Amino acid sequence: MKVLFSLLLVLVIASPSLCSKVRESNIPNAFNIVNYGAKGDGHTDDSNSFLKAWKDACSSTKGTPTLIVPTDKIFMTQPLTFQGPCKSATMNVTISGTITAPPNREHWKSNGNDHDSWITFSHISGLVVNGGGTLNAQGDSWWDKSSSHRPTAVRFLGCNNLKHGPMTHLNSPRNHISITGCDDVLISNVNLTAPETSPNTDGVDISSSTKVFIEHSTISTGDDCVAINSGSKFINITNVNCGPGHGISVGSLGKNGEYSTVEEVYVSDIIFTRTTNGARIKTWEGGSGYARKIIYNNITLDGVKNPVIIDQQYDALQYAGKGVKISDVTFRNFRGTTKDKIAIKLNCCSIGCTNIVLEEINISGLNGERSSSLCKNAHGSSSSCNPTVTCLNN
Ligand SMILES: *[C@@H]1O[C@H](CO)[C@@H](O)[C@H](O)[C@H]1NC(C)=O
Ligand SMILES: *[C@@H]1O[C@H](CO)[C@@H](O)[C@H](O)[C@H]1NC(C)=O
Ligand SMILES: *[C@@H]1O[C@H](CO)[C@@H](O)[C@H](O)[C@H]1NC(C)=O
Ligand SMILES: *[C@@H]1O[C@H](CO)[C@@H](O)[C@H](O)[C@H]1NC(C)=O
Ligand SMILES: *[C@@H]1O[C@H](CO)[C@@H](O)[C@H](O)[C@H]1NC(C)=O
Image (cartoon, rainbow, N blue to C red):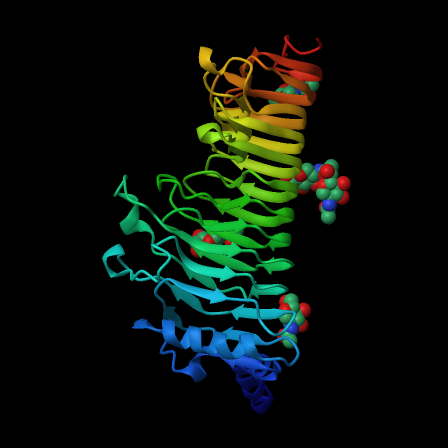
């Protein structure tokens, strides 16, 4: 009995490390950065080990090459780029341990991209980045320098057929994840965390990409949880806890007179907690293009400042008749509380927003008091909407 008990104890204690070791060595065609000299002591610069392991993985022609960042260690790297295209049609990057940026901005070296980002995945198709580890971008030393050019933590550039998560991202200097020029993307089970007061620390920024899905994730940062920018279409965001932060935004679109387009956006099953915005569409004056076919559905609000907001900025005379056209937008099944009096703001410029639909909305003040709405140049319909939006139905 005693022997059996000891045996069990040994098994219980040994099994987690046993499992992960077995798992890692069982992966065919694996490229473990430790075998390329990475120290993982938290302060030695391991960048070269990452790059050497990647070079071999990317030029391998067998199966799915897997770059391995093992568990229980902290690997410090300078800004680096995992460059594709690779020989294999699919690439796995399994990060079980922690990767950390230099602790202070003074210690960041430029890798030629002018501090644009910390870790870049460029033009790799069929890429999977998962493993449940942590990417700590150590952004705090960047946040207080308000005028400086801050880097994105992780950038996916031209990566078609991308899967990312489970993964934790901490404290980006600027946005945590940026997705640019990628088609067929699935981001799931990511946890993006930075202080509420950290500037411009968006969770995920999407631009010039199609078919991007974000699901089952928690995003608590100092700016937008997700921002959907120009050139994006077929974007689904579902089952996300957002807050603190600035909400899930389409835009800002049309800055500096740009032509911007976003369409086919579906956001559902979201809980916004203490965010400044919930569902937001924002455009700049003087731009052109459109934001259309956008649905926000099944949204829970807890003390949100602007639960529903369309914000077309100023309507200065020189821009009359010009602007990013907003149409076919549905806000359905919103419930909960607002921190401000005005729960619904539809502030459209003179060209007007058309086919704006509000259905099954019930938003009250923090103490159950009535909230109100504001409406300018918006056309469409509303039903079962508290607060009422009198300018619709026309
Ligand atoms: C690569 O990652 C995917 C997704 O996690 C997994 O299904 C696949 O088995 C992995 N391939 C290898 C060779 O480990
Ligand atoms: C996300 O990560 C932060 C920081 O590590 C942690 O405090 C928080 O509990 C995590 N949230 C979830 C939902 O895992
Ligand atoms: C994405 O959203 C659209 C609604 O606009 C829905 O029809 C489609 O099934 C969603 N796709 C997935 C994979 O959830
Ligand atoms: C609405 O979203 C919540 C998560 O916020 C989810 O638990 C619930 O199942 C969703 N309801 C429907 C009808 O999909
Ligand atoms: C709206 O929400 C309030 C507060 O939760 C609740 O008392 C009220 O019954 C709801 N109204 C409708 C029509 O669901």
